[in-house]
Image (tube, rainbow, N blue to C red; front, side, top):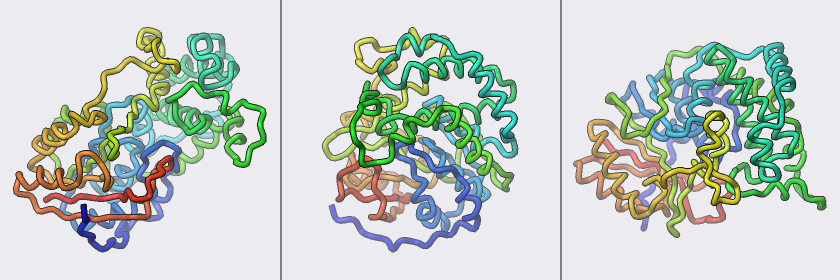
Amino acid sequence: MNLRHQPCIPPVLGTGDDFALLPPTRYQGSKRRICPWIGGVLAPLDFESVLDAFGGTGSVAYMLKHLGKRVTYTDILTANCEMAVALLENDSTTLAPEAVDGILADIDRARHHGFIAKTFSGIYFTDEENRWLDGACQVIPQIPDRFERALAWYAIFQAAVSKRPYNLFHRANLNIRTAKVERSFGNKTTWDRSFAAHVRHFVTQADSAIKPCTGSCDVRCTDVMDVAGEFDLVYIDPPYINHRGTGVDYFGFYHFLEGMLDYERWPGRIDHSSKHLRLVGERSCWTDRKRIGRAFEDLFDRFKGSQLAISYRSDGIPSIDELQAMLRRQNRRIRLHTDNRYRYALSTNKRSAEVLIIAE
């Protein structure tokens, strides 16, 4: 397919200094690095209300909020939504160093050989780290303030992802981290840094990102097809299925974080047939090449009264030609914008470019 290239529009953010405060993340698929480009493409559109339909790390929602838009963020993963509450819905609450000290002291007192330590020994974290996480799962839910609680979870989740090889929970591969071998990269320092040290670091980053602005954000933890309301613009950044038919399964990648938020029911949700003890869950239509085409059609039909901005990859399934055909059936005007500079961290496909489809 030959993409009709639109010149890359210069960033038109107006609040670039504010956006730079959004913490970096090791979470896969984050659009943080290309948000200035996305913002430049969206700037000419006329919209005040916007739905971030697959919110993920919240990078785009954060940018749009600081551009003064009324943002609705939605995601089906509860961990993503908890972090979005911390960074997006929250306008003013921070965690002072003494508050962090108190939370970490409570976790130290609560650490014990609980469900995580008994179940996940040798899989993701060391035994001592598992006991610390058992303590955290008892302490954090008791924090009364919603935003303080969300900030604590945000820091712990970022710490957990940082301490994982490949920053994922897709394999039982603690041995990669603990093997006594000579290493030519610096990840081991990050892996071996204590949870407490990581938490302090990520709270500091999060606190810096929280400031009042003219925009707003409402976080909803639900499937995009169940989101009520109408929006001037819908930003769509779905899980990616590459040309080989392999989909990005965020639920499978970050199931451990989901379990921590559902600690009491976690034992009954585990798929014991999997070596890494993932959560039981139905396969999403967004990771199934046989169903994703219909999923796009249903999504476009649901928001046929809104402008659409679709973040996509040039080699995705369905193809960009197929997506354009769906949109043209709604008599939409379509523009394609490409950014060849962006690559997913774990991708080896140098021919796959980032594409932003604008449909009006």
